[in-house]
Image 1: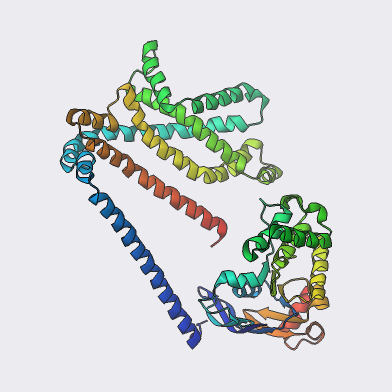
Image 2 (image 1 turned 90 degrees about the vertical axis):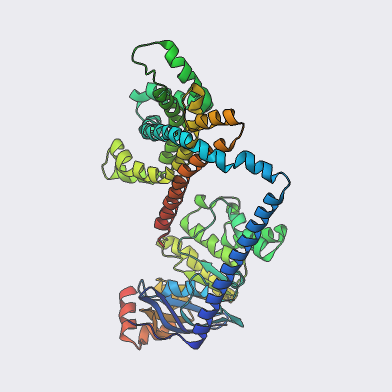
Length: 280
Length: 240
């Protein structure tokens, strides 16, 4: 069925809407130019600006420190990739053990509760130091002595506790009628958990989960305290030699660059989920 | 008071309203009937500016609803709308649900808004529920509160979108009783409904929609006993 030609009134209304659209766009553009322009002008005309620029944003120092920081940042990337891969199953296990209503699991439930309480309570930097300095001092066979793996273990333990709580909240956010519907179909408790509850829970907690991962990516810098040369350490070595903090700015940029894709991915997931639920 | 002329609305290629002409007088109760997908809900949503029409004229008294410069907030302050799924605010008590509109939109004082809300609840026999949260009410009670919430704004026109469809028969009766009261008060109401008996009893006019067009409209008795269009007769035979 082809649409009839719009009436003259409608043509006029559409023209008015297009005009309003343009007007709104113009207001946005002008507002951006004025506010951003004013900010840039205020900052760059401040008396301390040249000195500030030399200390934080020196192009020469940025170029000179870049290769060392780039190479060191690769360690941060390997760290958070490994830890993220380990945190997910650990956190899921802890969350499921905590909600699973089986008396045989009672000791494990207690352990899971103590684990989340303890490791969420200790500052991550303290966990890193306890494990990074403590484990090698034990001198026991079978305990890894590589600093990389000690860093992985401490970050995994710390973030596992956070993420386990996020997942548990997700599992408990699913309406009880979903459990009832699964069980009414004849699915067992673990089947209902696996096939019905978990898939919905994971979807609900993806945004907060991504948030924790962004936080984790930044916290890989904490392993510099046990002597691993990652981006922050490489940058501060350069800074100590030159008394210029531009190298730290460069390191900061590396961290920003890897978190932005994750942030946008989270936005996209959230929007997709909303549009699925809203139906339009 | 409400005048629609040649109202058109399409979603993509799908034409939902195909030239609707409708006039509603003050104090009139108009029931929209028709199969699912015939355009009843979309018509109500267009009047409340929840959807933007593609063409046509819509006037509420002197106000041009189709004018893109019309402020939707001002329009909706004059029109009340109730949905099938109650949509009470779950974080507010019944009383707060009834007073948020008058207080925030009309600027009514708290004591005055509360006084009116209590009056309305008394009439509903829900005085004891003033401080209860919506989740603790039955579906019929929730829908009656939703209706009264719309009335608390004292709208010139009330749009009701299949407000009894999610209720079981006993609860439907509660809601329909309230609607009879509203009719007695002289409210102007347009309602999309599947309650043929109620439409026959209470409507001043029934409008039968099919494929986005008004097939036939007239007083209930005329439609039920002497439908001019065979589609109307067939629909009424199936649904009553």
